[in-house]
Length: 321
Length: 230
Figure 1: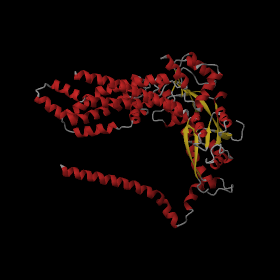
Figure 2: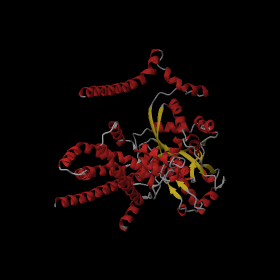
Figure 3: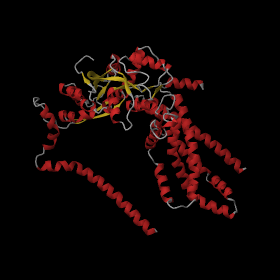
Figure 4: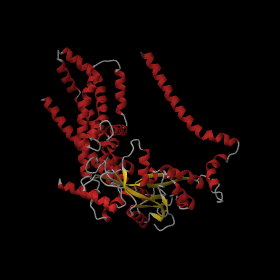
């Protein structure tokens, strides 16, 4: 008995050591693997490869040789830019163009701005114009640049409300017939937009006992609305992505779209380096110039067309939005 | 009570703090009670009976003691969702659903703790009872009395886990304001709004209430012990 136990513990110990060694080995391999052949032949080969397609697309621009790596640029942004996959799509191109490794925390607009206020990030990409202007007025941001917009839709069961482009008709009917509605209630850009619309239409959602607040992100709230057969205000991108990718497919339909009240403008702001001198302001400015450039604006306009049949964002940098 | 209510409404922003406190304790008390009713007998039975595969069962139990609550949350969510096997109950986004998830998380903890105490103490107690000629019923009662402190501690651990849990109650409860929002999911929401101070304050209230509850439990326990000594 004692002997078998000894052997067993020995085997266990060996396993742990083997696992640790394998883990270390991988770590060593990762940088070593691709570097080895390159180091023998020509050291500049590997960075040139990822940039190549970009280069061939726009051969006219002179400064298209891959930028040398400069470090990490931290950004706070809203869940919608992350949930839709837009940032994953832009990140490698940004790295190749400018050399900055963009990393982001996708949270609600309220928290994103708070992270900027605390100097935790160098740049914010959010969508709540009034709060953004307040952020700058408070001295936390330098200047706001419009980047793009997407639109909100009302998603919900196709019955009893039929598809329309009139938000007032939909919202007043929800109140009148006391239909279930899931609000995010998390002070995010989408939540603010929803509250704004209720207010503008002079309706009080508190009169609807079926109106609930989820306090969660867009994806979770959509799933809840789907479960509860409820209506909810969502950005189009998250809705399309969930409709396509969720394990349990969303049954929610678009009930209302196209109303002028449903537009959603994104702005990018560099956090004020006067307040936080050690913040990565150079990277932030590089990002703003880059995302507002004609080339990237075009890329944003193309994003999602192939996968969802429609663009998720409409670029509009340089406008007055 | 009104003064407290007023103070809370003035101090916290509009996330439904008062009802979240109520929901938290309602849920924690229910799930701890159910888990105790299941976990204590299971732990004792597991110690008492020998059967093939018992070591595996004990090992699985120990593994489940550390199961990530969010995994249980996901499983219970899939079980309870409209198109899930138990969708007809309509338990998703209700306190009942949250209690179910928490029971699955806490029962292995209580069961495992009771088992490991019983393994250490039960054989001696049983020997003693046999020597004294006690009936099986009397033996069981004696065992419960001897292990009272340990069982109490196991229940307390379960309760602590229950009020502090956030992943499963967020998924299954849905964090609906005034309905299934608990103190922990309210804190998580406050954080997502960037309102850190109120989150910390709510956390302190949570700790304070756990502390008071423990004082209360200790008070009753002492009384019981002194009654016994008389």
